[in-house]
Image (cartoon, rainbow, N blue to C red; front, side, top):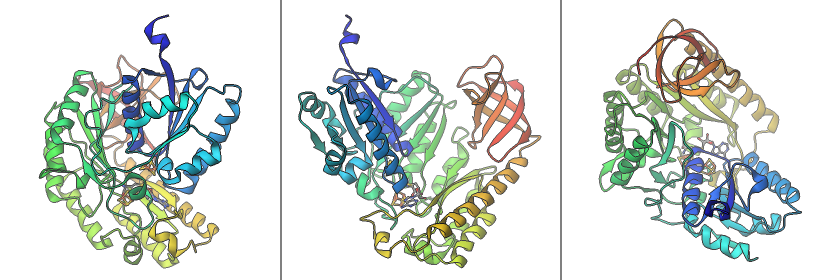
Amino acid sequence: MSIEENRLKVYVETYGCQMNLADTEIVLGIMNKSGYSPTQTIDDADVVLLNTCSVRDHAEEKIHQRLGVIKKQMSEKPELVVGVLGCMAERLRSNLIERHNVDIVVGPDEYRKIPQLLEGALSGSQGIGVRLSRTETYDDITPFRAEGVSAWLSVMRGCDKFCTFCIVPFTRGRERSRTLSSVVSEVEQLVAQGFREVTLLGQNVNSYNDGGSDFADLLAAVAGVDPNLRVRFTTSHPQDLSDKLIDTIANHRNLCKFIHLPVQSGSDRILEAMNRTYTREHYLALVGRIRARIPGVALSTDIIAGFPTETEEEYRETLSLMEEVRYDGAYMFKYSPREGTPAFRLGDDIPEGVKTRRLNEIITLQQKISHEVNQSVVGKTVEVMVDGASRKSDLQLSGRTGTNKTVVFPAGPFKPGDVVSVKIGRASSATLFGEIVEDFD
Ligand code: SAH
Ligand code: SF4
Ligand code: F3S
């Protein structure tokens, strides 16, 4: 048997946001160093980990069900170790052991403890690590990334905004930033490994701060690593998005002209109740400045329907804001009460049927707007980075523009990461379709 075959195999399922995807790679990096190998199939795993999300009740319910299924399917494999990581681990702690009899529960700031906790679990003792840290950034851990062209990279952790509906500040703890130099050297390694795109991640990247270097400084430094590396980032809080950051995006060709700028609501009273710390007017002025300085920029957003006490009129202000901004895309959610958040105390007074109707109308409006916005690209030639075969057919390739639009075109001699020119012939609300006009890689 080779050494490789002797190693215990770990299978991880990741739920929730991109931060969790990046964290899973950090966890695999830690475990790889301690003698575990990742596997893509649950059946040959010695350790099964679920990296979980608490942001809405629905997200948690899905995990509870999945844990039930895994425990049942694996009942004839009693030596299997099952663990819960991520935001649910932080929120529910020992309740997860009581409810599902899992072996380890580890929150986002204690991943270095996983090997030690697993050692205990493999010899039969359950373990918990859920302390939050003011300093942990996993700066020195090399994430274990699958080969590919696109990489995630967390540049900060935690959130200090305390929007009243949101569980994240409780599950992820206080804001802290990685050093600029460690981010830049990781990006240099990514380029050397063949990655062509990096997405810098944080719950609120605009709060990035490394001894006076702000997020604009970090973006400029990362953009400078390689002019052919595409650089993306998410998420921006509207309060902290500075003019300096807007100019930095405008001035670097390889910084993608795409900003995810969650608004949540179009009503000042609701924004205040959400503690979003900006008004509709401030937000619209910011959008105006972004559009004036970054021609062709694409914008997306997050919207919540049915926040406690939201009146019909206030909900309509969200619709009118959407009409005014005309987002390229949006993630839209029904309000979900999270125990322990300030909004929880307001109750959940909008009836389920009303929330559903509001959400559906919001989705319908956004689809119409996305469709119209995408029509304006028809006839134009766009620069597309190839991701791979399209979801529907091997005869077609799929890629993305700098503005984060998915483009589908007939397959040619291209590999993932190649940049090609595609002339757009038609567009739906979600996808642009076109033909290659030239490749300039
Ligand atoms: N840090 C990011 C968002 C993180 S959570 C930001 O501030 O933009 C992603 C999205 O989930 C939020 O923008 C919000 O729209 C939604 N969300 C968070 N908590 C929610 C809740 N309790 N109910 C419904 N949607 C919620
Ligand atoms: Fe949650 Fe607000 Fe922080 Fe985003 S900024 S993670 S919505 S508290
Ligand atoms: Fe979910 Fe935690 Fe991300 S709650 S959205 S996995 S920060």
